[in-house]
Image (cartoon, rainbow, N blue to C red; front, side, top):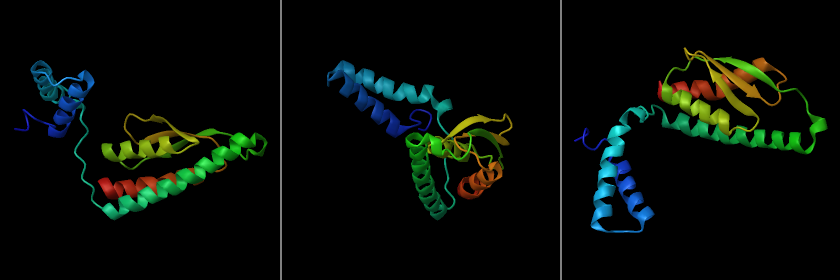
Length: 162
C-alpha cells in the first residue's frame, strides 16, 4: 500500500487543492485531481525528507524557547544597528563553526534556526558536513559565537535527533 500511496495526507491535499483551484466538482476534475494526488507523491518520493524520530521532546521544547529568546535579542540588536548605525560595536564577519552533528534533519533545523535569526546567515556547509561558514552582522568574539552555536543549538539538536 505504501508504494501506491506513499503520502496519503499529501495526496488528499493535492486532490482538494486541484478542485479548489479549478472551482469545479465535475467528474473530469475529480479524476484528474485523483490522478495528480496519486502520481505526484510517487514521482517526488525521492525528494521527501527522511523520517524524523524525536528522541527527547523536552529538549526540543527548551531548544524552541532558546531560539525565541535568541531571535528576540537579535531582533533588538539589528534594530539598534539600523536606527543608530554609529553605535555599531563590531564589524561583520564570517565565522567558521566546526560541526559534530551529522543527522540531515538536525542540520536542516540548524539551518532554519540560523536563517530566522536576524544578523546571521548560513553561508556554506563543507562537503563532509564538518564545517559551517556563518555570516554574522557583528562579530566581537568569534570564539564566543562558536561556543554559543555549539552549546545552544548543536548540542540540543544532537540530543534530539541522534
